[in-house]
Image (cartoon, rainbow, N blue to C red; front, top):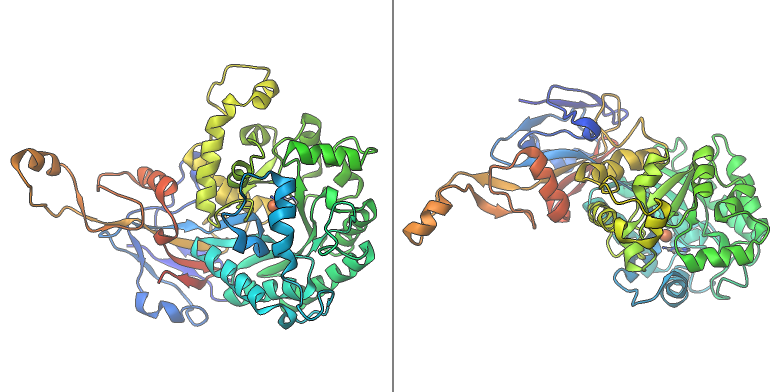
Length: 495
Ligand code: GUN
Ligand code: FE
């Protein structure tokens, strides 16, 4: 009943004749029961050769296409540390867990080797990066903004792996040169060395993908405490020296201790956000991770500069950083997307982050900080994110954060086909054999899945599609992701 045309030339949606949901803010996805790829058997070859992908409905199945997820903040080298954070807060966690694992991505024979060849990356590092890209794709992440490490070869390797797997990505070499705050074993020897190393990763990435179709560099000062003023200034200038200006990403106002440290280190600045603003790092292509404890003035400044916020609720809860008031940010006109923040965040899944965003928004009213922010007004419930809100942040919101709102995050005609096929389970009305008369009368009212649930999502057959989406968000995982496409190319098929 349905046909979809995706151009092989540019991966954009040319047309379809199926129903697109236009439920208020939730316009972003296609629904209907059971869309399935008519060319199932030839899918593996669909990467380069198919001109037109034909999609037909199959009412026996509960499948739907959904826009690919956008992870606006993830640290690829921290992937091996997923689940390891003890009870430490941010600053201790960085020293205890994070800097050690990141430092292991340097060339073993010469840790200061900043040649551009990705092959100078330690084999374990290559394996980790390959796994990060494969696993995030398997969770439906079609676009990610990555922090790499300070190492040029490994940063280039991450870019090359995103490119070869076919994942849309922004890849940033991390800059950190403050000798008082960074460990001696993991630091740029000088701000200049950081600039030069960063430039060589930019050259490498732009040579690999000259049009920036899939992969793009992103300027990445780690966060204010790890950078000198000279380094921050230089990175702001470096971003602006490209045409168009490069994207920028960093962290902001993640924890109270971190904010106190910034005030100590940058006494001349009016606020944490002002540190970045003075260095021209707050642009309309800047992604600020966390923003848990931003002041009103900082939020205003960020909005005026057009910078975006990556909301990372799984990480904020895991590290005890705080509860970010997302609805306040949105109501004040800021652009917000979701980030896993692996491995502050314990999961590479944006679906998990969407669910955590809902949970955190429901706890917000009990936070003293939030109560003070709202003048102790009794909660009217407006701070709570709905499933639709959260999935919006995971797709269209993220697209706006990476400055691609016209291209990805939805299925409007002319947008790029970055999509996932979600499968919730085959539900039929087959009868069950009752154990006794009492259970028979109950069971008769239910539809029973013939082949059982897919993953963790149980459907009983009478759910509306909105209810199916809700069940998917609360209980789904990578087992529900059957296929993933980026730029019209099939890049993942569930085993
Ligand atoms: N602030 C500076 N570096 C980091 C990091 O690696 N993760 C998180 N969550 N916050 C940071
Ligand atoms: Fe982070």
